Length: 172
Image (cartoon, rainbow, N blue to C red; front, top):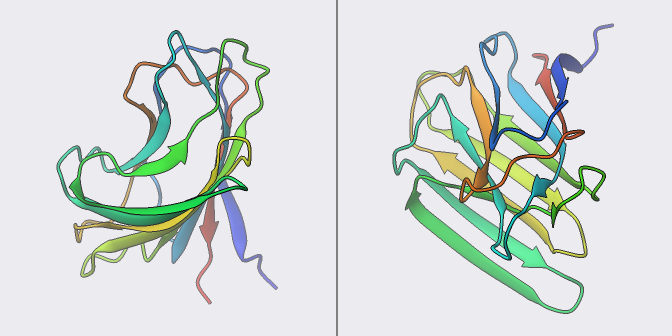
């Protein structure tokens, strides 16, 4: 019996020095991808920081998403169409790498198919900032071979100790 989730790559950041983390050269041998990220960002001002996702280095306005947020006392929803920065939700900002990290789960369906647009679902879990859950669409038929997660607005470095894991879901 084979396993359903197969680990492809895991990285723990050793320094607080980059606004972006990428999985590159993703093999096209699975049906879906799962990314788990335990991440926070270092701040130098009171601005907001969010984690956004990009596929194959595409910085064009080829993404759309719909999401809901909740913080325990209120709920909101939103939609972003034709955006270049689809957000997975707020990141905790702190000056210390030991800061509480968000757990972000991303499920990318049918990522290696070259005849359909790519869809993903995500959940960003940290109740003190808000929980965000949503779906997204990348309007491209290209097979996904790289996924980048970056701080938006690109001002804050991802903290050392942030952990990123890429899983492949084996075909049935």
